[in-house]
Image (cartoon, rainbow, N blue to C red; front, top):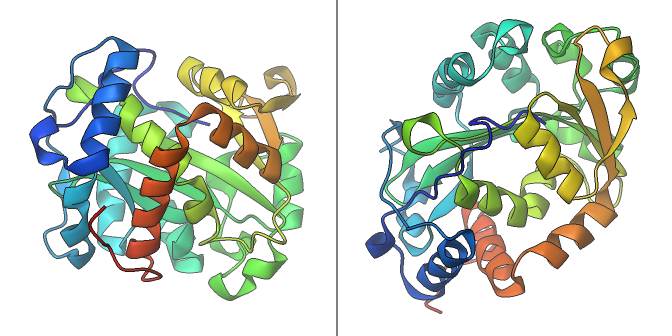
Length: 272
């Protein structure tokens, strides 16, 4: 899992913009991190995204990426990755065409993008080659991905990238936390929960490896036998959900999951 920003963690939200239980959650997290809640960043804003009308109730939320967001994703990748780990815009567009459900944007409550989550439903033959270390991520093509109507066939998912930027390009723990507690909603856009078995990710940064270790990912192949020179990690889907529930506040998880349901059109936002 490629987490941008290294080890420097800078919380990022103007606290006055949050309301209700979410403001309390933010303050509690900032206290736990022993850091001030700070205003931050500029990024890519989608004023046309009508779903942003509900974001005022939360520090960050996860929204489905639009094709227009891919340029920002590609540009951000050039800032935080290097070498063959940087996925070209053309490849991102090919993946998105094959299955847009794997692409999510992390936005703050002003609508600004501060991160992205790319998860690929890779077909068995290509996934096997990737797990053996015979290909790079950028060697995955659109034809190698399950389409939106094939979600019940998806047994494994590949976490291609997780970016959460704070001030000055530092890591953003609150945005990462939002992504974690939103995991069920993010993943079930791509794969049927009754079919999904496990997830894989590369250990391409110290921050990513630390996060995966904390949530129970296990190394399944070492970098020295892989073409991409990164360790590969795996975790079973249901144990990951259990681990997330153990490590995050249940009330926060319910609140963020509620927002994911709203953004998916499955529920209406109500005052808490």
